[in-house]
Length: 87
Ligand SMILES: [Zn+2]
Image (cartoon, rainbow, N blue to C red; front, top):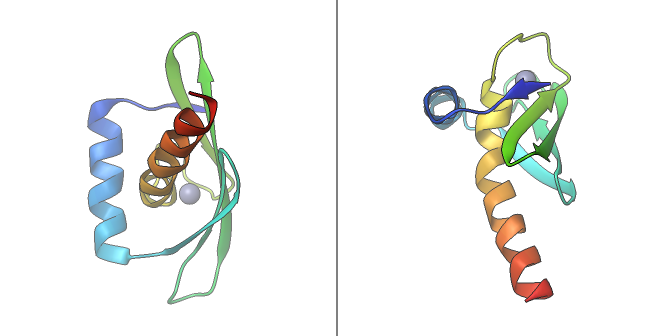
């Protein structure tokens, strides 16, 4: 599990914009990311612990990867929906 910081997520989003993987919502905080070129599938999970944000991806990367960068956009939309639903 890796902590999301402003710096590392910005880099991951930049990379995601260049590779444009496909993101599918599995459930809130869980996303399936597909590399359109290779067809490889990865699962990204988001966590919130004591106000800090964490993410996990099942690819080999040991830092915030572009799969996480690609999923965060969908995650923000989902999180907002949850807020609206519970408000
Ligand atoms: Zn990854």
